[in-house]
Length: 256
Image 1 (cartoon, one colour):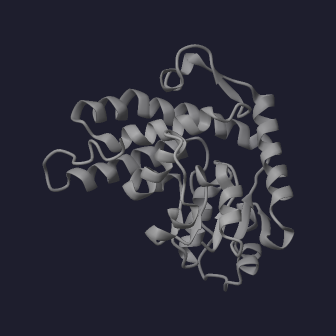
Image 2 (cartoon, helix red, strand yellow):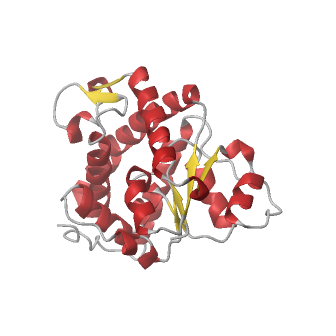
């Protein structure tokens, strides 16, 4: 692993992933869990089942040498320790813009899964989206100061009902600022770049020792449409991969 992204979701992580791809890295992202069983399975076992994680094999075994976004950013300490030579990117943005984007991610993504993807997957016995849902909801609900809480019911149920989820903007702000402060304290300064994607190629390439590409710095997922489009696109890609040749899914018991 050469580069570890420690920034929270909705800090330009999708743009950063595309930038890494352009620079020649193979970069993991939250969407990698939706697309690849071999990435989802160890995270599911670690987060949901509480089993040990082989950090040194998690991404490199699948050919990845960079990673951004959740769930990796939630466990940046383990990854930074496992890869002592890896450089670390803390993606940041203005907290006032981050709060509504974070809340949109939670509500939009969860409603899409809860009302459409999960019923469909359960109906046909397609295990992968169900495991993705359990992994991501368990991860987020383990963060007590993430800025939202469910009012009643179990997390897997409450997370899908907008009227059962209440946000606290001040708690979201503290969560954002405390996470960034913790990363800066934990990661040695010579290994860390605090980066706003609006800065473009120059600071990123200088830090990584890469030439500046002759293409604009990628800009994706602007506004609140990003989570919905990412979920829809990756669900369809996964669906086509599973059902492209016809027949029923074959992953029903892969993650038990």
